Image 1 (cartoon, rainbow, N blue to C red):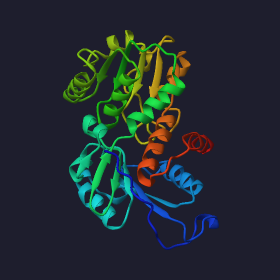
Image 2 (image 1 turned 180 degrees about the vertical axis):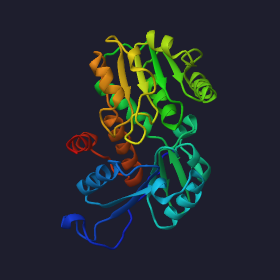
Image 3 (image 1 turned 120 degrees about the vertical axis):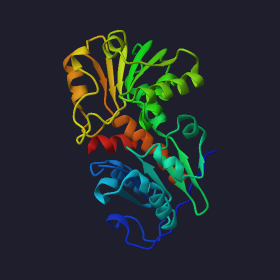
Amino acid sequence: MTLRAPARERPGTAIAGTIPSASPSVLVGLVGSGIQGSRSPALHEREGAEHGFRYIYKLIDLEVLRLGIEALPEIVTAAQRFGFAGLNVTHPCKQAVIGALDELSPDAGTLGAVNTVVLTQARRVGHNTDWWGFAESFRRELPDVARGRVVQFGAGGAGSAVGYALLTQGVGELAIVDTDHARAEKLACLLAGRFGTGRARARQDVSEAVRTADGVVNATPLGMARYPGTPFCAKLLGPGLWVADIVYFPLETQLLREARARGCRVMAGGGMAVFQAAGAFRLFTGREPDADRMLRHFQSM
């Protein structure tokens, strides 16, 4: 089931003086840790202005607030009471937030991860637009790559969405590697149950997995400005591989830089960030966003 929150009326001054004060307004936020560099506020607010909304997008940064994920129920309750149309959810909250919700969409329920929460006075419904965001970016940027065997690093909330997306895009066998091998096994079991036996497997032999792969995906936070590094030794990369990363701040991570230097085709995380935002915008407002316009705006930042 897809629920759409109506636009909310709020008093105030129009954004940059371009939107009448009587225009409908939407109040949303992003919950995560270390999110001060997020491009989500600019993406959502610009697209809202294009639709005639006074769109207000707040950062709720656990690091700045000195809070842990145990504060998520309180944060969701406060947002609901203050009239937020919804919340985006990012690392490390995509799985932990589920306990604070009333209902999950089919995709979020299957994946066990939420990146978008739609709020009404009566309900809190979790959705997952991450998987579609990655799938759409992959479809546009790497449409013709080999996808017989792919190695994915990361089995957390983002990893579950990316793995789901890769299998919908025709990946034959997905090898999942995570520092928590039990978590990788759990995700592999979930995906194999959805897509068929043998389509997803947890792996620990990183060198062998990468050596026999067509492509590699980083679905961990490694590479972010606050989590520098790569999920595996870049010396394993060769020119026959394609490499995708979900990190978009910075847009060219160390992994992508080293992959490009070794002749690999690469896909940065910007496309996923934009397309998942477009899906969230649709859920928050009930309006159809212009994803290409949002992508152009992202590229201009």
